[in-house]
Image (cartoon, rainbow, N blue to C red; front, side, top):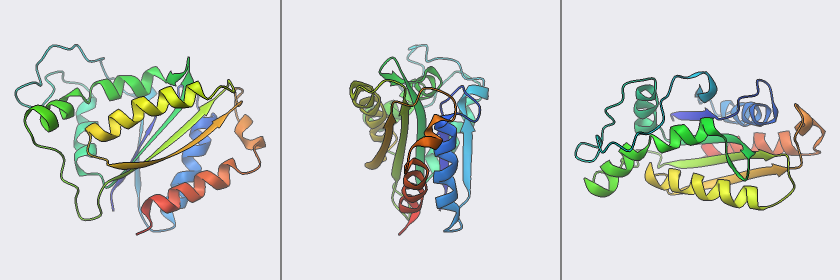
Length: 190
């Protein structure tokens, strides 16, 4: 089973990365390997809304996003991990999602959705926010849901934590790491 993960946090070893690492530990119990894309370290240009993908379903901008396109097409499980900034996903996560417009064109204009594969396609959304307002989760999840739908991931689980703003504060939550670990296990359990 092929599993990919997108780390959308700019903070090294921060709350989002800690949760993602626990989810990955849960996945590895079943022998799956996870390919992690640290979006903050990648050179990905924003979508230019140029229409270059309208007729082919392929983006004409050449950068490190090409690695992501190939990984998404062949993945069985996809994890998106992001902090919540201003009630939304991080810029790092959003820039990658916006570049998936090519998949939207391929699916909806060209009628060529990504095949479900042997195991089907499922997703996991990990969110951590400093504010304790549910609006951050709702807004972030709406964007993630559109992303998952566009890349033919019909179902995903969301695991979210609010009120954790400082680095590694998530470690003080009584069950966050355990919850992330279990979410990872459940993602790949057949």
